[in-house]
Length: 145
Image (cartoon, rainbow, N blue to C red; front, top):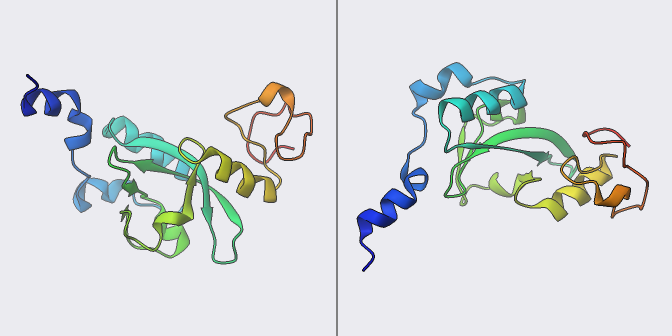
């Protein structure tokens, strides 16, 4: 027999909440998204840092990092750089699909990043980019061709 308490214990990270406005206030910033996302994950380990791109109004990708709750909700303390004052972006938000994560949407992130001249820093694909077959075995960071 599987009790609800067992499920809650097993998925405790899922049931943890989001930072309150007063808790997140020290992290609200319009820059340094990677540093901020790392700091938030250290403070709230269930809010995993994601990196990838934020899709601008013109469709171009912007290199970005944010945090993701186990339920998929995005916590973006640096969203102000994109004109948003909301730091919690749920799946119903019109902003949600603008966040494209290497960790959760790798193929889409590759395609968007490749438009900007990036190659996926998460994978080396035996040294060849799957988008253009360029040898990228020695390039492991965004913005490096």
